Image (cartoon, rainbow, N blue to C red; front, side, top):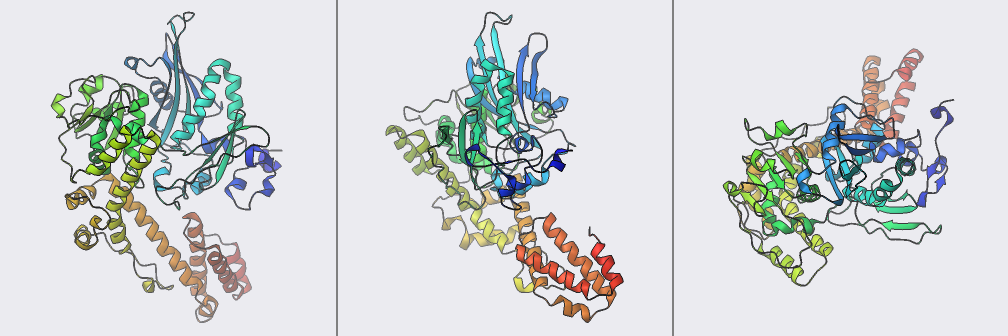
Length: 591
């Protein structure tokens, strides 16, 4: 008997306790996922890799767990090179960082529908990008005279589609040191624990058992007010297991990352918002990856829609594509550590050079924006090398506020909260006029007729939008002066606008489809069918069935009652038809 025939596996309850799957809420994600071994694991991770160094082969993937996990040769090569710091980084001891790489196309994803269902409830900036994987690395390099090379060098790497950098960093901190001592059996036990986790449902407080520890966390939802993080309380565990509450699953220490370029945060916000090509040159992958992730997050709640690579090497499969001089640099943010990039990427318009990131003990000194021609090597002084002129005037208040925090020894977490709120308010002031204008493109509800196709959205007009800014522009919510019009014109040509507008367009089109469905439900369809021919009635039934399928397939924002009502209408119409037509229509599927 197959596992599918044997029925669902037991469901995981609070604290890692096992409860029956039938106790799960009907139709809930928890119930959907109690199917096969490794399905729960796959909802969080694609696989776990161990990358070692072989004197003859160089870097090589030694272990992939679970063993059935599939990686193409190209993916394995990328993981090998991205899991080790460049030799010039000199990372002795333990180092943590992350990378991001392209998935090989054409592979089917298990649990695809289920994960898409969870994805819908996430804020847009946390939605997974099916074209990429993240690699979360714990690298150890220590002297070992017993080895021919004189060093023990190994990385434990978690491969996932989820951008939950803080969660996976915390996990690795707990399991990697022990893995390096205990080896493969320990790794199997870790993966077995992960395969008992509840699914990554946004908005729920989740309890994730990991080798005697219970990690408690909450994944944000799109309904959360931007800038607020519901606190996950640490509660006493009755079974004496240690509990650890994670304050976030995805955020990095923003202030620590931006401290080396403290005075240019507003200009960097503009560059990220506009999707400009950016390179972060750093002494190690830890610094490069954290800074790239901080840059990408600074325009939240907007999603950064271009590619970004927290750690990028000369061996990366996109190296030639991204470093060619035959065309303009692409819209991408790269984090690099190899000195070779100082020459290879000299033609890039914006380069951030950072030194070792330390917790600031003194007020950072004012650093001028440097000219690109002054950047000769990776040893150049820290700073921002660009000829970019910001559209907005500098906000001196935030600089003073953060400087005061350094003088008063305010905790870096508190500084990060201030900085995150500043970026959030700046982004919201910028995006609200666009949201307001795009909402006006929606047809009025009175234009929706059940007997016609749903009306189309009106076209976006740049000129019409610009006219709205005089009375309803960012000046309503921001005191910042400057060339806001110029910033909008530039933004409307960027990948970030394209991604944002496509998303809003899709939402509003689905809303129109949902309103059309409601209008159909409110009609007396049986009465209509009695006044029309059988051919017209059959045509209506088929169209209504297709509408129901579309609502399910596209996850339209329709109430369950509306769908039930429409199904009742369909059944009533069919039952009023002759028996031979009833049989055909009850059996007929829809496309």
